[in-house]
Amino acid sequence: MYTEAAILIEANRLIVDQIELPKIGPGQVLVEILYSGVCHTQLLEISGAKGPDPYLPHLLGHEGSGIVREIGSEVKKVKEGDRVILSWMKGSGANIAGSVYNWKGTKVNSGAITTFSKFSVISENRLTSLPEKIEAKQAALLGCALPTGLGVVFNTARPKPGQSIAIFGCGGIGLCAIQAASIAGCYPIIAIDLLDSKLEVAKKFGATQIINSSKEDPVKALAEIGGMDFCIEATGSPSVMEQALQSVKNQGGKAIVVGNAHSGKKIALNPLLFNQGKHLLGTWGGDNNPDKHFPRYCNLIANNRFQLTPFLEKTYSLNSINTAVEDLKKGASIRPLIDMSLS
Image (cartoon, rainbow, N blue to C red; front, side, top):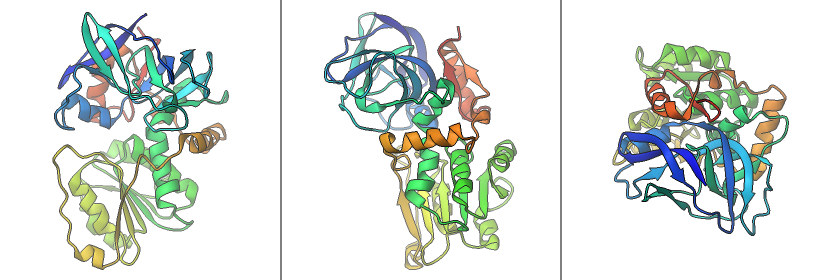
């Protein structure tokens, strides 16, 4: 069987062509991809910013939605015809490392999940059944942006109503974290970004105050408001990670790093910050258990507790994936969606 896919040939060279799928093995599932998200982690892989890439050429994409078309032996979690969420986050089921596709006689590597293709062979544990009340287009965001943003608040930070929070970076994950903070009853909720356009969206999503960090020092501005109980870093910039820790209150304030930094980058911290009782935490994609948490997030969407419209406004065909990548780089799209039905 052949499918159309985006193949990373070398750094900054992503092409779309026909490839041959491997036969599915035990614990694997053939999925027809309906929608795929494009996130900043993929930008790092495309540009080579994550370091030397030993797997070239290979397939990308780690969040999406689709329909199960065939299951391998031992697969029990899903069946043919099921609509599913595809995510890099591991749930229950077989954990199969990856597959090798064929491109005109050249081997093309793939991990346990790839979504920049119209059909993909996916490891069982990267799939979660999708409730009927959720549209496939909405579900594409449930693979990465939405659970990471919600999870970093609900699962990692765990704020109490009335506690203060600042979110550095108003991309897909940051905007989801702002909505989660609003649902959790945080106050104030302060959004920080370089672009006024993103800050305007942040206000619609629940931010009570905004700071444009290209015009004022966010650390100073937050100090004037009062030390934060929580700061969420969602930019991948080491300097912003440092600012997040500086901005939380003494004796218990927590800064949580979500963003992925470029390979080789370091952060420089004053040890005094830790003597002041500040905490610096990491998070594994919002510390989600897909089988447990994804259904909860679906309920929030179904009951209109979570706004998705701004995330769904820009869709691209698979053939236009390089345009989607450039738009994400420039901030012209919050979260590009690849619609596999578009020509």
